[in-house]
Picture 1: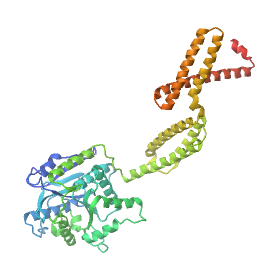
Picture 2 (picture 1 turned 120 degrees about the vertical axis):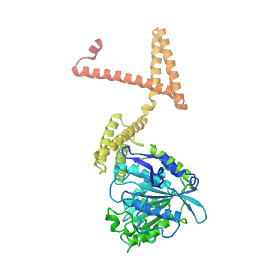
Picture 3 (picture 1 turned 120 degrees about the horizontal axis):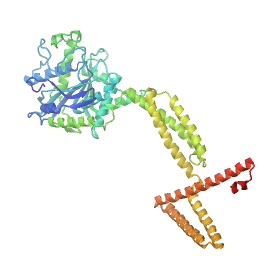
Picture 4 (picture 1 turned 90 degrees about the vertical axis):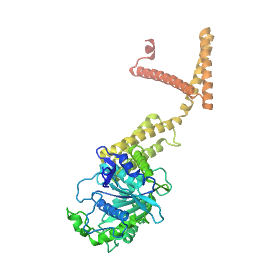
Length: 525
């Protein structure tokens, strides 16, 4: 651990466990750096350099250290130092062996006095990630978002140019950062600097800040003829950061790029690269340029920064945030959703033509037949539409479409049923028919002297009359709906039984007529 040794060094404070795709904050290590007595209550300036592996981030961080140590010790202008002196600091080395994804900070926090006499604490941060592997999109978005949320200056280290996918990745991780922060009415992040390395077109845009700003303005220009997605990316970047700058750095020289023995000696580095370094590093770290970290307009101390780290990592460890998706996956999803929506419209519009709105009542059998026909039509449309993601990916959306069609069909059935005039008056019709039939039966049984049976029929007439009046009250008032449902169910059951008996006897009569047997023989049996 760098803190335990007397020599300062980089300390891993956020680490991505690639196997589990989880990340953890080394709270103890971070606290040991940020809670030192002499800096804990100072407002903090956090300078983060972020970018993919092997693009020379540590090289830049080493020069920043050189500048800060030079200011601390003597404040002399020749901060680059002895041409023979090798670079020390963020164990910088060339090559291509894998590095850890995560956030490192320098174990020594620098105390710097600003021109007004105010002391601030300066923290250097190195953010590493690779956007080349689909499996780590979430890991990288989280790490980059965390460093953007906790830094006052985010230096986005890019190789040779600002490509469209660099901007899209930037949009992804800033949006992921914005999601995790509470509702913020101002721009959520402070300064973003595009640091373009190995710039090869100084005749178009000169090295340094001036050429960089002209290049950036051109690159981030929003034009009417641009695709909407490209416009959105540009608008998004401007809406997220209070200040966006760009610096174009030349190539450091072949000795740096190709020699395995290169240890960062100044004499091996190209002259024009050193010239631009002497502009870039003071531009970021000069006491008059230092910007304290602010969240929601309030300055953050070292102690506060630790709390923000803890709070933000907790949000990312939870399950509340949506998983950021690769551009392909997001496009494939949108593609399938659009195809499903179009297919659903086909089903809905066709069914509306048959039984929607003011259309007359349709028999349930015909309605079901039409449903099957239009469902197949919708599914065929979905399958024929060209979609990204392949068959397996699309199958889930097809299942969702079938579920939605099923729900629509149930609604159409209810709507169609409500048009059936008899179904509306079925219960009172059954009750009224029952009352009339029982009243007649009561009169007949009384006439032939069966008084007890007549009394029984009269009681049943009374009960049915009470049921009819109750049903009418329930329909009118909307109260006691369960009781109303029970009366409806009873009436439907009686009607069903009566219909089946009538149907059976009709079938028997027809059958007897066909075989030439007189109906009374059937009755005799």
